[in-house]
Length: 300
Image (tube, rainbow, N blue to C red; front, side, top):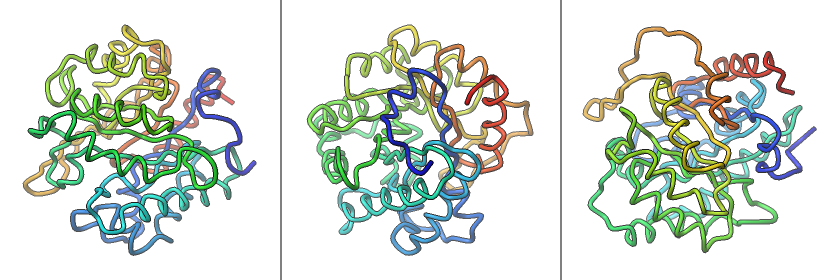
């Protein structure tokens, strides 16, 4: 059953859909060089075959959404538009080769990701909403909203504050594309310190936003965030945390937590999560375990 044929939003009305895991860790495990400011974008530019192989690994693990390698591609890159479209094509190729329905999500990372200094975990860049919209607009408009070469959805992900979320929603309104909006959170607030109810309410009335939630955060942060989202929107929710490690921007390394218990995904689903997967350092094996957990609760 190659490539999903129906809208992702329609599927979310009936069941939980399994996302993929961390693209960067899978590329590193394949021996790719992710050094430099482009991160996974470097592999997208230099070794597209490896990007497709990473997507294929997640599809074989059972992922039903493959997220592209465009996270750190900024609009000032001389090949930005071509690389963003290449990312969609590579994920699409892996999706078509899968033995189950797979959707493609085009990653649109935050402004801080392009700075390559961990700013997406702080937010508050000193830019206005209008300036942030000007940054994001060419990236979103580089991807067709419909037809050949279009992703199924945009992943507006790892958003650290409400200013950037407002900018993204404004750009999305004029682009005609569908998207999910995902914050990175800490201590029950956005990384910039704003209340989560305020943050999720920004997208509550945006028709182009098909789901809201959190990613690249400690798994312990997920359930409170989902409950905050459910209080202000009836949209499907999403959760794809990392493994709980803490990023050290000075050394560009992660400090891993001790091994913990399995994620409480049943509680996440009860709170409204309909897109569940992993972010940094969640491997294809981790996604396969999530698939088993979801299937064990009656998921197709």
